[in-house]
Length: 530
Ligand SMILES: Nc1nc2c(c(=O)[nH]1)N[C@H]1C(S)=C(S)[C@@H](COP(=O)(O)O)O[C@H]1N2
Ligand SMILES: [Mo]
Image 1 (tube, rainbow, N blue to C red):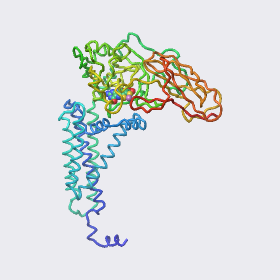
Image 2: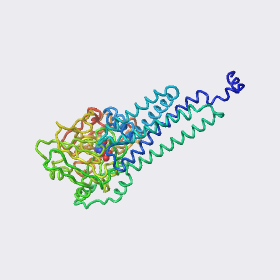
Image 3: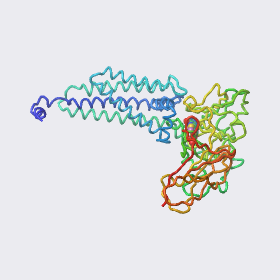
Image 4: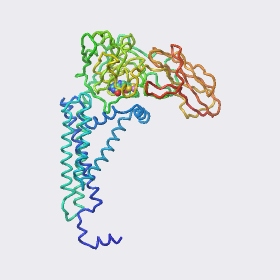
């Protein structure tokens, strides 16, 4: 109290430009301005570099750091992210990066006041980390560093300018004028740089060209159209639709932003242990894509009872025909498929050549692949988890061996081979549901792709296993719906499901997590009957 009174009473202190605490804040804000200018300019230029075709890599420092982080994600963290954020894992990562960058920028700004050299060192260290990430991305070249370095220079100039013009501005008559000026300059720079960054990103990813290419897509004439068999659906509300609409189809990949691949420049090359390399373009693939197949695709990260699985009708060209054209050499046992974004999957060669419907797919559910599901082309192989087979935005098939090469997830703790396991899921009633006593339809799906489902059984509490009624199956590569008419009695009950596949093998009862080669265990739900 006394202090304040003194201040008001003394005309000298009244002219102090800005009081110390607000100076600290002003310094921190300067760091934020410098950070946003750096990132905004770099992101804008990254878009320009991509659009002008100067870069094939990841010139965006934000996407490069995010991508490098994802590539170093251990299995437990991947499982955690998928379980908690599902398909929003990328947005969560980007939001996390924004928070970390904001905090670091504020800290660097704060240092600018009394420890300018240390602030500059901190800034340079961050730029070096981003540079390392940019140069580690697929197809990286020195030119990819351009946007980051130019952004860094402008960011540095911003820090100097802020220090000289705002922080050290000699005591003006009106302290609030400095603050006003700082606020205006700061907000202006932040908004301007952010708008620039987003504009560059939008322009650079070429989404519009790809959207119009998708819109112009016409399904090729299919020799034998595939349809849903009568009775595939058991007709119970709440059961996952037999054909999952593309908009609801689960999405899993390592791409922070969905790759926008223009079919006009897309190519698929067959390389490695082949008699002659083959390269096909979009028109060739389109004209060959006359085969349809219904295939249930599934992620190895699916937990018991999880929903990282979907069934649809794919249109494409059998991989074996393209491989035959290239001439696979003796000794090869794997095809390493590669995506524009550097992702790879190692698929056992027999799965691609043994006559099953392994496709280079260009359409799902009768329409061009959505961008997030691999437009313009992806692989789908019945009987294998997606991580070893279903490469989206595919651009290369390298014929090789398991001894020499490994797919993306193998060095990250997942099995080199990923055949799917017999599984079943209860869709209704949901766990925790309250149902009325009497007849209750317990229903869901069961699958063992490329083997087929022979039987599904339901157990109430510790009672005997009872056979469920199965919906029709289109083929052995797809799931089956099932329903069990339960005579529910009042009280709390646990319902458990298990499946038996067409080889007679009963689903594995022991609980196992997704890593390294797919979860096992029976799915149960608890319900209350009143
Ligand atoms: N390019 C690319 N393709 C990919 C992946 C990826 O990370 N990148 N993930 C694979 C995995 S783990 C799965 S389960 C399937 C999922 O395909 P979907 O997103 O169309 O459902 O894609 C596969 N293809
Ligand atoms: Mo997956």
